[in-house]
Amino acid sequence: MLEKLSTLRPTLPVTVVLDNARYQRCAWVQNCAEKLKMELLFLPPYSPNLNLIERLWKFVKKRCLYAKYYRDFSSFTTAIERCLQDTHTIHAKALNSLLRLNFQTLPKAQVVTA
Image (cartoon, rainbow, N blue to C red):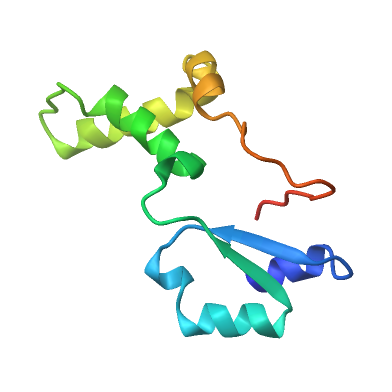
């Protein structure tokens, strides 16, 4: 991913925001980022509110796990898949307020997702 990101804007400085997953802190990632002249910015530990995927997962768990019983694994996975498929339709309003990017902004920063 870092190599792909480096080709998108080769003349601009790149800062990649990461959570604290072990595989993102490994020596290979650190060396690759250094070689590509990228800055790695790690979110603080135990800060799920800063990580949008954690907020989405919390929403899905609330919809699909809390006080729910599934007869088999297939029913469980179907419920998860349906919830994720409905994010842009049925759940759009709830997720719009939950997944807002209302944090401190960095002037003249461009957000690129890979």
